[in-house]
Image (cartoon, rainbow, N blue to C red):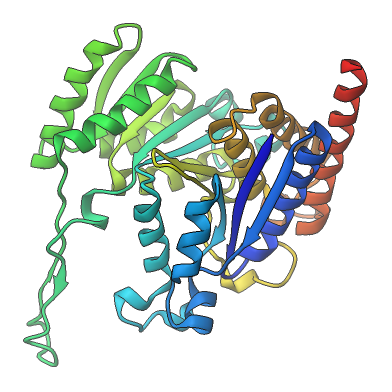
Length: 371
């Protein structure tokens, strides 16, 4: 099978974790007999420095010509004072729009080998396996109008800022349909998270989701306000299955779940719905540790597993990558964010190499069994 992937390493630790994810992807391709085609392009701060644009046309064209995009991270404090359209994050938001990636999937799984990493007691976090389905192209992040009042610049306390939360029925319905369909492959439960006691957008959200649920009678639907959901995620995380929510709520809750399972570095994501899937770790660019070879590559590597499952429809290969992560953690390998005081740590490259070796051996074993 042909696997056409555009790699966007980006900023900060992005190139370090992406390189390890690609090593694993190469082992998958070689071991399972697939033809991998890789193309690397710039995005974010590195693209601003080189082209004056956080998402150059050549990057967009390469992404749209491929089957999937693997992104590292964007963001750099060097551009914090730039206009909004000339910040690294603007490139990522535009890329999501260009790819039509309206459905963001963020799994959060508790690994027993990392029980000590969670701030919660093991009996509380044990069994946690959550999939957050976040709407990605609407809400406050994209709504218009948005502005900071410039008429009163220089007048202390006089400026105003405006952001607009906006959702249409078709936007809500399409993301809800994704959540219900995915719930059918899991434990058949969807929790829709909103703030319908305050927000008109959330009232429409709840109405549309409730109506669509009639098409999925085999899936149990429940609703919860976002503040209550945030509290319950800490008290009873193992009770959640699929969480369906809008853009900003999903952004916040998925980071919270990273803390619940032990580290944001463990979280992968898939942004799907358009012709090309976008896969990236949930963590940011972490400029404070960039270039030190200490970043956790598991989020990027698990993003490759999501790519194999959702874009290429290769569940056996995806499961092999996930098994490599579990085996490596059970073997005691820890990057700095996962290690307890006094515990031995490994580098970004060592962690990635261990998983790549697992995939290589597993694929070899699979080929021998098949022959």
